[in-house]
Image (cartoon, rainbow, N blue to C red; front, side, top):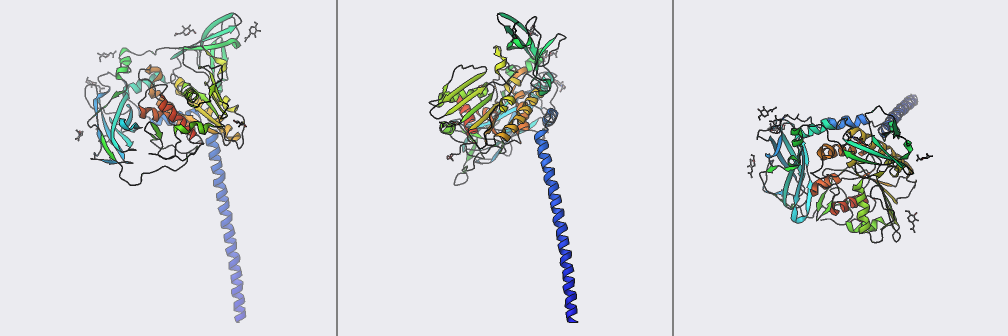
Length: 536
Ligand SMILES: *[C@@H]1O[C@H](CO)[C@@H](O)[C@H](O)[C@H]1NC(C)=O
Ligand SMILES: *[C@@H]1O[C@H](CO)[C@@H](O)[C@H](O)[C@H]1NC(C)=O
Ligand SMILES: *[C@@H]1O[C@H](CO)[C@@H](O)[C@H](O)[C@H]1NC(C)=O
Ligand SMILES: *[C@@H]1O[C@H](CO)[C@@H](O)[C@H](O)[C@H]1NC(C)=O
Ligand SMILES: *[C@@H]1O[C@H](CO)[C@@H](O)[C@H](O)[C@H]1NC(C)=O
Ligand SMILES: *[C@@H]1O[C@H](CO)[C@@H](O)[C@H](O)[C@H]1NC(C)=O
Ligand SMILES: *[C@@H]1O[C@H](CO)[C@@H](O)[C@H](O)[C@H]1NC(C)=O
């Protein structure tokens, strides 16, 4: 009986065990099936996000972030910096390093009436001149004529706030209107040469003509441009191109709205400076290494003793630049704002010398045989906005240049720097975005071939407040920077935030000074050289 019972129990136990095993098996199977599903699902998502990024996606996500701004009626009804005021939100007697400082702006028009809509384009900074310290601020549009500007207080001292109204919302609206789908702001003249024969004709990205065309590059790859076929010479004899600006048709009052005297004016503040003290003993010290692909915080950094520092990782000092470059190949692709890097390095690194021919419009090469350093700069391909005759065949699309960077599995001596934007400002945004997407695909191909090559994206910096606003306004640069963050944001690249640097430094120069250029280079190189220097 007892045996039988036990047997039954054992039997039961066996059945139970079997049952449990079956259950476990099913659960495990389900777990793996689900897991497999998520894996393949994730893989698909990753692949999709790496493969498919359309111009329309990027365009709509950018316009979705921008408040609709007001139509221009008259200057009196437009936002005016001098009539507007800014004050501290929840003012305190003193602040701690690390605190957030919020400033509220109440925008008014030229008649002093409060604005009811958002859309004004404001650039903000904090600074302490005697410490050579500065940083940029983040502007939140409250959409009712008020703005909240937030700063992170990085250093102790008397910190001043400076807010510039770059364009009133009406100016932003006007810029949006005259820029969208407008290919007619720049006129190109192509020069065709064969032997002693020479002919000129009009060129552009879109030509409004019935005449026969010479077409260059495929239409679908976004690098297309064309010229009206010259009288006798063949299309292949196109040698140079130069450009002139064409003023869009705007009224006298609209011209006034975008005039220099209404651009970049300081907004009145009802306080002078805030007192910031270091409240915590044992100053916060940065120890993390800078890695490509790190999410860029806001603010991405600040100047202190004229050197750019990061809140998240260790930047090398300017003095370590030549040590870091030893044995490296630095390949710079883009406009003259990255040409500044080779010009700076040629002066700074003692044995680095230019190798002729040196052409400031297309190509520069510098070599240091002592430290085995090569630095090369190449201008990006058409479009370039310049009255100079640029040799068209010397400049290749950056995506193609990247495809020519040789594979180097395991080698970490190649640093690729990409800096585009300024020459695209007069063209519709979709042209720029298509170009960025081409570059994005080429970066992914490069990283598949050379996983250890460092890819650096230098964002656009601000430019002169005296620029032709219809063509080159910093608002156009701001939009293009948003596009760059969207297109490159998920890649394993190092971002050099020249936009924030130039706002912090208040430079407003297409070619910023050496303090900014040295900082740009130091940020880039910090992603491959980690010397663990001390800060503050
Ligand atoms: C513009 O300002 C005038 C006063 O100069 C005012 O009468 C008018 O209502 C304003 N228009 C708008 C659209 O706000
Ligand atoms: C604007 O909006 C903010 C946030 O919604 C609000 O706090 C503020 O009082 C508003 N300002 C005006 C002038 O209505
Ligand atoms: C554009 O340039 C062409 C020469 O390439 C010239 O014939 C034409 O008049 C120019 N157009 C304008 C609007 O300046
Ligand atoms: C220049 O002209 C010659 C003779 O007409 C022709 O063979 C050659 O292909 C032309 N060169 C270019 C670059 O078009
Ligand atoms: C231009 O502005 C002036 C002064 O604000 C105004 O009197 C005039 O009507 C405006 N002209 C046009 C065409 O809007
Ligand atoms: C600045 O303006 C705000 C709001 O009008 C006011 O509360 C504050 O007292 C002013 N501060 C100074 C220093 O005048
Ligand atoms: C110089 O650097 C290159 C890579 O840029 C490397 O292939 C070469 O071996 C180096 N030569 C010397 C002498 O170190």
